[in-house]
Image 1 (cartoon, rainbow over the protein chains, first blue to last red):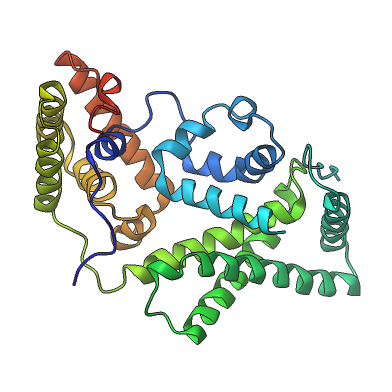
Image 2 (cartoon, each protein chain N blue to C red; image 1 turned 60 degrees about the horizontal axis):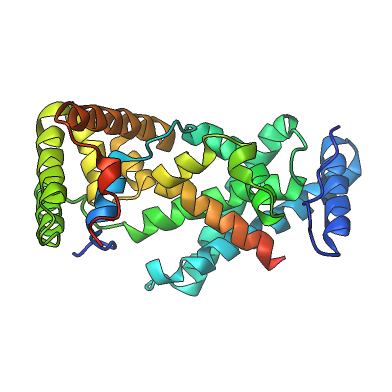
Length: 78
Length: 223
């Protein structure tokens, strides 16, 4: 049975293997801050300045990045 | 109780949503018959969020029947409701209460959707990762430094990581296995596996630096 994913290109492969170069939050800290981060983004504030390390974590963690996209989309649908 | 914030620059209507959110939080924190009604309202909100998330993931779940999807949404809302009520005292009022609560439903629905999408699928073997790396290297025609970086990366993954770090990095970063799916198969959780991935990445960066290679100079060089 084939798996439900696409093979990445060279850049995505390197980014995935090496992760962000800057300090990042943990998954637990990211979840803790997610609602505030997304509301700041939604309101046009620079959320990465307000919550240092969040952007780097979202760059390195596909699952948390998906959670962020989903919450953002849900707020935009209201 | 802290006051839920307005979203800066939000459109008209946001004010009333913030008030409704604050009112719901207050009734959940209070006792009496009003609390049961507030719990039911919260469940409705969480169910809406879970359905929203599962609808977004229809592409990854093409074979999921409508009643199965609704069942997953209900399970997600039920699990999220328990989590929200358990953590109610931890809400700091730095966002609207409903935004805070939504994230629990989205997390539950997202994890359940990813696990369902991978049901019956084997976790890819390391061999597939090496084929992926070779394939990526082959696309870098005329970019000797980038090809050298990819070759060095493979060597560092094979020789510089612990077996557990290699297992997690290869599955998540190279073979595209969702971290929640891998966590379920390994009896772990997202946070613990991400810590393993984070440590593995640091080792790889250090190993490449010792070879005089700077991966951040190469990002974007493959396009």
